[in-house]
Image (cartoon, rainbow over all chains, first blue to last red; front, top):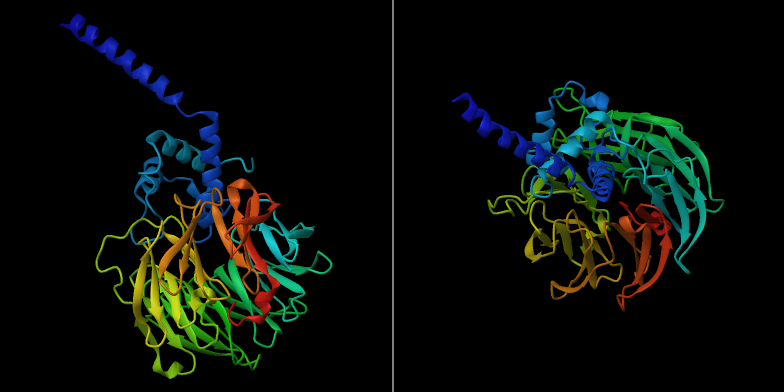
Length: 112
Length: 362
């Protein structure tokens, strides 16, 4: 019984690992550059080019300190109803949004 | 002459629109995300408002900064008084309006935008109005205020509360009579007749969305006095891919024009025959031109990725477009619709010609 479970489990894990590897290799350098640019210039048009805020709140690591990753993620995907924050879920893939969430939490580099 | 904002490098370029060249580059302008500019009455000096609260006076003739103050945490725009002696700045942080001497940039008045509960609102849609007045809107509180600053020691503020949810910007008609605030939180615009302020603020184009689900708005539209062409006002719909046409005789809907995306700037060419429209993400590589007589799309241009801003030459024979992701300003002939010149400028955003000094409310 246990052997059966392991027999099933190992390929599943391998599949998941393969998926993860495949998924992480999907964001090319160029796409990352574009996401960085989007964060600074498109998000930045409301949040400030330095992400220190404007019409929208600051998105710096200091401002986001303590905010759950999932909250940030959901805000990007769904927007905030009743405010000017629009949903980006249809424009960006899950991975791209993950990249943006990390960039917001960890801070980004300016300029290209 | 005029200037082009190089938003990421904290610089502005002094330009001239006779032969379409750059005359000077001015650095040290601070954070120029969403920077805008107004001009002294003699058109020599630009007052540039920066996102870091910076207010910088730039001498166009000498291509250099005359004076710079950091007057708030975060500001978005401003206006010069009718007599040219005062520069008013519209602040997000702290929410309010501050007035400065146009010569020295000394602060002469502070007007906190405090709603009835004492909380401060971001200020938007600040315009100069005849009679030494400034008119502006409180974004968070949903109010319109008129400040009469004729007597510097005793400003008279008239407040109009409850004009609608989240006024995001406003325009003044070129004759200086009507102040119109666009609303983000509901469908409609708020109108104030400055000749008869006692009549209060009126809702126009109410429920123009007809209950339809709003489309996402990836960039806030902007309103300025160039919305007017003859008797008609052309304004962006919010959450609809339409330009709304309003008859200024009675402020009722004259029509609506389906367009390529969410309009951001809707600008009437000075000659009045065309209205040029640019768009928010993801449609911001396109510009459409509306014929004001037929109310149809006359042309569609694809100037390049991320067309942020447009500025007509004073008599409208050419228009300058900032094409952010081409790192270029493109100059188009408005008769032939051909690109006739371009200037290489990194991530250009706002373009402001000094002829704005001659127009009320700009």
